[in-house]
Image (cartoon, rainbow over all chains, first blue to last red; front, side, top):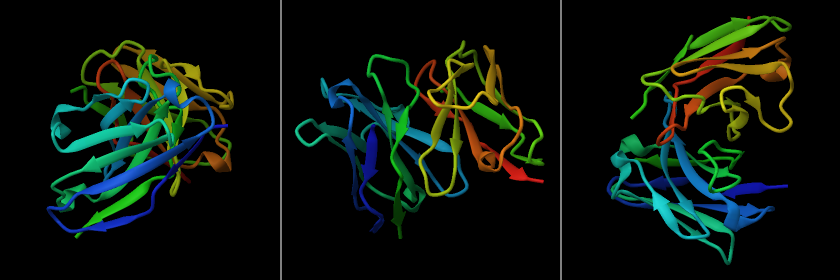
Length: 120
Length: 106
């Protein structure tokens, strides 16, 4: 059984950075594609990027290119998302979302519980 | 970027009734469409992928249809645990999500 557990809530100042972690247990970590998705208050879901732990390959949508860094540590089966130059518009719940097989299309089988990042 | 538009924003339904949710893409996404159920305090739950394939363990009352730009999620007979927000997501190119439809108790 796959479990995805994220780090706790963060309160950050504008202009600072935040790192959110995502511990994955169960299954084969190297098979996953690990994605990050956020939901701002009253908004829908927004994809921030992904990492393939097996290769370290990352992909980002243009709007977040250069401001988001996603990574994965195979030794601890933990993924990370770092977001820089925070503004109040980055206040959101951030989710780690797993694709069960990295070569498969981008729909997400397993999700973490979410991490609230508040910027104020 | 492919923009996904869901309607209605809110759907009021009585338990036992059928619910029909719509999702429209700004350009064709083929059958590369997923649906998720989202409850407060939890991560979203995958219901449907490939526009019409139920994910593992999803009850048969959930069904998806459509292709190209128009998609539908139907919940056959609403149970108490089905009241939640539902999102569609395209994965024909970089993933994008709709704004969600809240299914509430009438």
